[in-house]
Image (cartoon, rainbow, N blue to C red; front, side, top):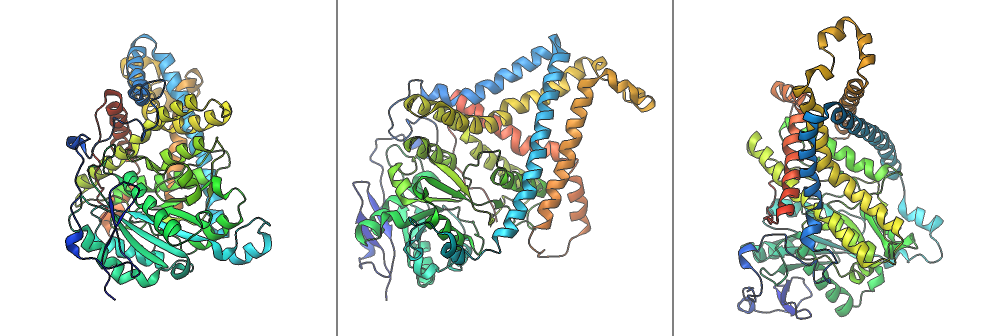
Length: 561
């Protein structure tokens, strides 16, 4: 059977390409280039910044003002820290010490949660989910065989080898041939994307119930070319294809959106079938599994592995800790019912995970929550041909992620728009999002400047090292210094614990460890403050500053192979 593209129209949104053995045949000359209507600024097609959040009414406070809140606070923190270092050095040092102690306690709680999470993963890996369904599915549960998985894979200039690996991983999932539809969401801006998708569908169509591809046009009004716009385009098309044309029940479809390099745990969709079918609140839930940056762990520079270990540990901790509110990250799931009712992903957003959750939360009157799936998936860490190239790529990736600082303002706008939602529910979400964003921006400024500049300008406020070595009892006279030192030591110890926890669960080595690799791995510990400064703090501050002054961000795909 010859598999060729089909052109179909979707609610006036333009043209979309799909590919399936079931589709009608057309000639390739019918495929026309996508063109902008001329109604948007083509010069900033890849930019982010000036939007009204996908057509929603303008907020009571201008979006530009809301976007600038994190950056404004970061710069205020910098100016206040400089002035206080001269005028009130002891007070500033105390504030920095308290913030450092809070950070250390937070790391301690993350370490405890990480241990709990690793135990839960081992427990979940032993569960027979079909038996669990038979034992405790409630009366209003969906029938096991009714659940259908729609997997959307947005991609742009991804190597075909990455997409092949992703499709093979999906094909190995539970009953993929019977209950899984995969949509490869391509971008028209990528030359040759149609030919690439055609080849993949031809090779893997037999592995799934359905395998399609869509092509997201470039230059649509109100859009930028990004993952969020691409997956929204693909999801709307898939809803029409599956529900309207092929008769699938909207309430039985669970949508999973994933990065192109995501490799799911072998039991992920097996467990997800149970979690979706048995949950009476299935249409008000997101599902998230912990991420491990292990796919190419032995190919990245040893100096950067500790940074990925930190990221892996903190992501698991947020899911495993009952005292923290988890948020979606990278690859996650939600019902097609919830996605459709919430208006899909906004087409002008970079931090699509948090934004989609927040949008759904307010759309459903604050009832939306995230459920944990303790079956980790593997992702590919950014890398480069040289160490400095890898640093640059990691910097740009963090810069893109830090664009999620916009979500502080977005939540505030939604709180004003939905006063009927209980304030404590909205505020808890605001605090969860603002906490991490402000701690990475203004908090980092206070902790770093506040712990260093007062000492440089006023050396007498800390005890001389030589005197302390001779008489440790002198530390009683310097409680702020002791608090700051204990906080730093605790963070270092927990950093080592995070690294050990990550090493234990890493995949087998692809090649023997070299002496140079061991030396670089050891050096990564004392270099961690420098590494976090360069690949975490600085790009976060840059993103928040650009949002403050209104400079858009160009979306770039991070190099991972």
